[in-house]
Each structure stands twice: as C-alpha cells, then as structure tokens.
Image (cartoon, rainbow, N blue to C red; front, side, top):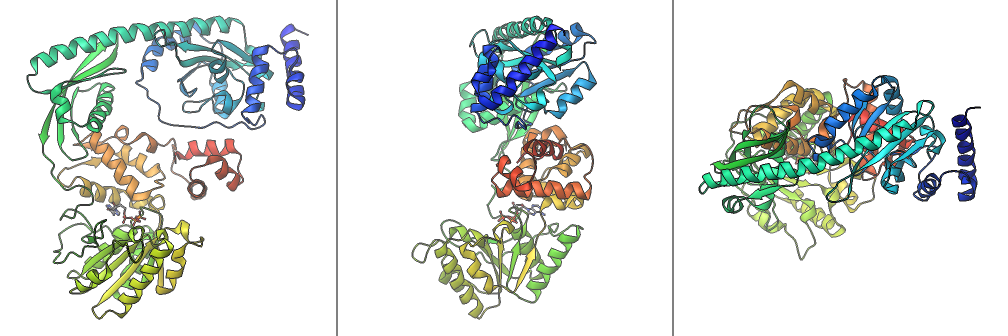
Length: 617
Ligand SMILES: Nc1ncnc2c1ncn2[C@@H]1O[C@H](COP(=O)(O)OP(=O)(O)OP(=O)(O)O)[C@@H](O)[C@H]1O
C-alpha cells in the first residue's frame, strides 16, 4: 500500500479514537493537528455537522483584495489544469474570493459552504486549511482525515497566512483546496510563496498609495482657497479645516463611504450626494491611481443646496398621512388640516392587501372599534390614517403611541387635553398596543372607555404586531374593547405591489427629485424578504438616494444586505419555506441555532437556505 494511503488510514483511525477517547487517541498524529482537534472539540464544533455563518458584506475594493488580485491571477495560470480551488479569506477567516480551476472541485466545495461570504474559522468548522492557519500562525496542510469535520474528509487544504509586514497582523489566508487523493507537498511551497507575494504587495501598495494620496491632497488643498477638501484611501483620511467646519464627523463618515463607492466606479470621479439633513453636496474628485488600481480619491466638497424638505417626523404637507403625532412632550391635537393632492398609499392588488383595505374602509364607515394586526413596519398605521382621511376629508386624526403611556401620574398622553381640544370628528389611532406596560394598558383602557362615551363623533383603531398575539402581555385585557380584527400582509407577500410601493416611498422621501429604480434594482428589491417591511424599504431607498441622488437607482446603490443570491422567482412552496425561516429568525431574535432547532432543520441546511433565499436577518 502506498505511503500516503497508509498515512491517511492511520490518521483516520486516530481521529476515530480521538473522538471516542480524547487526546490519548490522537497518538501518532502531528502535534499541530492534534492540538487543533482539541481546540475544535473544546469550541463545541459538531464534527458530524459543523456549521458556519454567512455574511454578504464583502468589500471587493479592500486593500487585501487589491494586493492579492494579481497574485491570484498568476497562481491560477501557474497551476494550469490541476483540479483545485484557490481561495482568499479576510482577517476573520471569511472567504472573500475563490478561483476554481476545476468546476467539479468547486461544486464539491460549494456543498460544504467553502464559498465567498462563509467563515472557515476553526471554532466553526474545526481543523481546516484556513481556521487552523489563524490559530497556528503558520502555513499548514490539512489532508483528508486530519480535518475535524466529517464533511471535509475528502479534501486536502493547504493554507498560508498573509502577514502584513508593517503591523505583523494576519490580514488573511491564502488557501489551495483539492481532493485529498490529488494533494501534493508542492502545494505547500506554492501557497507559501504566493502568500508572501501578497504581503509584499501590501507593503508596496501602502507606501506608494499613501504618498500619492498625500501629494495630491496637498496640491489640491493649496489651490482650493476656502473650499472643503477631503482625501480618502484605504487607511487614509484627511480633511482640511473648511471640511471639518462644514461636516460633522458622521457626515464625514458618510462622505468617506461614498468616496469608496466612487473609487470603485470607472465612469466619473464627481457626484452629488444628499446628507441625512438633506443638504445636497457636490463632490468633485480626483482619482489617485497606483499601478492599475485606484488607491484613493481627493475631493472638493461644496454644498449645492440647503435642506429642501422636513426631517422625518416633521408634520408638513409632504408627509403622509395627515395626522397629529402624539410626541414625547405632549399629545398634540392639530386642527385645520387641509388635504393635499397625493397618490393614495392604499394601492395594490395583492388579494390579502385588497381585503385589508376593504375591511379598514368598512370598519371606519361603520365606526366599529378595530385592531389592525401585522408585522412591524408593514404600514398598518399609514393605511388606517390614509383611508380615514380619504373617507372623511374634514375630520382629524390623533395618534397615540402605547409605548409612551407610562402611568396615571406620569403620562405623555393627556386625555382631558385631547378631548377638550376635540372640536369635530376625530380618529384616535393607538399604535402598538402590544407594547403597553401593565399601567399603560390600564390607561388605554380608561381612554377607550372615555372615547366610547364621548359626545363628538369618534373612531378608534389600535395597531399591534402579530408576533404578540399568542403572548400573555398586558394588552390582552384591551382586546375586549374592539369588535373587529384586520390583518395587514407583510411586504414580502406583496411582491406584485412592490413597484407601486417603491414609487410611493420615493415620492415621499424625495418629492422633488425624479428618481426611479432600474429594472435590475427592482429585481433586487422584489427578491429580498424585507423583515422590517416598508420601514426597511424606506431606509434602503434613502441609502440608495445618498449613493445616487438623481437619475436611475442601480442595484449596487441598494444596501449590501438586500442583494440576494436568489436567481429565480420563488415558487409558492419556496416562498412558504422562506417565510417560515424568516418567522423563526424573528421569533428567536436572529439566533440561527435556535431557529434551526425550531424548524427541525440541520444548521447547515438552514445556512444554505439563508444563502439561497438571501436572508440576512
Ligand atoms: N404605501 C406607502 N408608501 C410610502 N410609504 C409608506 C407606505 N406605507 C407605509 N409607508 C411608510 O412606511 C413606514 C412604516 O409604516 P407604518 O408606520 O404605517 O407601519 P406600521 O405597521 O404601523 O409600523 P409599526 O408596527 O412599526 O408601528 C412609515 O415611515 C410610513 O410612512
């Protein structure tokens, strides 16, 4: 029997002994491997079903990626047709790039989640050619049964650390993986040399880039007079006095994020960006190119316009619905609201949504106290207020947030003031009654009783989250006050309505700008599950508008988390499965282990499904 086969057999037997009886079973196995098995076991890695986590926030423009790119390209050419996969990880053992010289090896590695976004640390996947390199701080080959996990037994992985020559930190690992039968000690030499090349590039890039950015910044600042000048690079950020006076540190961070986005673009180095306070800032940039890569950007930033519309929460004619908000300081009742011309938010053709709209219209017409149930941010409040003002244009509405009702003596909601100020038909919307404390629920009960006896025409609707229904929270005592329950569907079940909803949100957050989504961006929006519903969609579109204040929003302008990997429209069965996973994650506060147990699913299957459905919650 050849030596290599013999060695593998012995290691396989030692691994079985180790799993049964601990370190004594690992006799004859190299110390570095035996120590790693022990660490894997101590970390609680399940050798029969290890599980890793996934994140889709990979920075393709990072310094490491930039320095590794030419080396990986060369390595790919050097190994030619040898069936293997070359992988680069970041400093958190997350695979950030993979080059397959063999589709078959690539497919096999997909099945064990050795793919971009997945973490291969030792405490998640056990002994392997990435995580163990981080632990040992040196190159290592892990061949066949030397892997701790069952599903990695057929592979051989050779990894070498990429050590930053300046900081001496491990910035990542370069790994070559193949089938254990095709492993050769030559791979060790190859990987070590390539990792060193990447480290050398780190040093060169840093010093050349920093010098080039600095030189350009000095030149532009000297000519800029009193204008704001900022310089951005991987580990460089400079702002002159004018820039520091003009932008807060949070705004500077935003400009930096946008500059990094601009660095990745090939078309133009100038752009306009909206700050959170809606000032429009024009950035005129100069790209700093080192070698064939963009290493930094120096920009002159000018305010193009002052804020053009109110802050979120402000009551103004652009903000729907037209209602008074019970704020922190008082429950204001605002009268004399004139109705503006606008598109209704109650649009949509999804049957569950149409049904909810009809029911809301009916309870308001017949003045029946109702609870509207649905996921947070699904638009319960907006829908009720909108339909109410549509049906009763001269009436007013008051919103009371149940969280703000504390107790009798210390309350934000002053019922007497509210009712005394009521000079006409009024809708009271009590939001999130499921969030009420015991004292709050008693207070709300008093309010509901008082409203029922009030002489003026009064409507009363409460909203609550469907996940609270089965609980024994204090709000349960309030349900007897309501005659009808209406359910609002979550956004992910309203995919047909999404184009209208997106248009409506864009009109609301950028009323004076003609922005729309490109077809590809709309596809991204349609595939994502939106666990926080319209609230989250609004945040995502605000983010996209900051990236691209005018014109057509592209898919890369949307936040990374909603770029799903789902490449087809989901079948009803898949939608049901995705919804069950989202619900379980919500129930267990994003705890994937608990969610998998609840769903009766292996953790690895859950991770695969998360990737398939693009669920990042
Ligand atoms: N059709 C729509 N068009 C534009 N914006 C909308 C639409 N529906 C809801 N919104 C916006 O989405 C956000 C969430 O809506 P809303 O507050 O009505 O949801 P909710 O279900 O009552 O939320 P919560 O459970 O958190 O109280 C709000 O900012 C609202 O302005």
